[in-house]
Amino acid sequence: MTAAFALPDSPAGWLGLVLLSVLYTVAFTTLFALLPRLGAVNNAPILNFEPIAALILGYLVLGQRVLPIQMVGALLVIGAIVFLSTGPRR
Image (cartoon, rainbow, N blue to C red; front, side):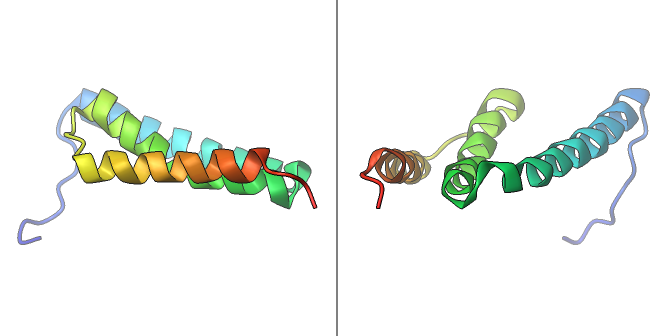
């Protein structure tokens, strides 16, 4: 972190920054507006899937490399979500 923060210097950069800000705000506002309606049991899978979605989008959109340990972690999270979602209700 030795370099200073630089604002975008092209229209495409500014468009990306504005879209990021708007979409992030809309997504989180919608998420927290809907969570009370879903109930506590249904909130956990949605909130725990967020890192998996970030991993997938980073790979697809940004071209980031996914390490094997990250894939194992993603499968572990997905397995836990499926296990807790399909288990018997108490």
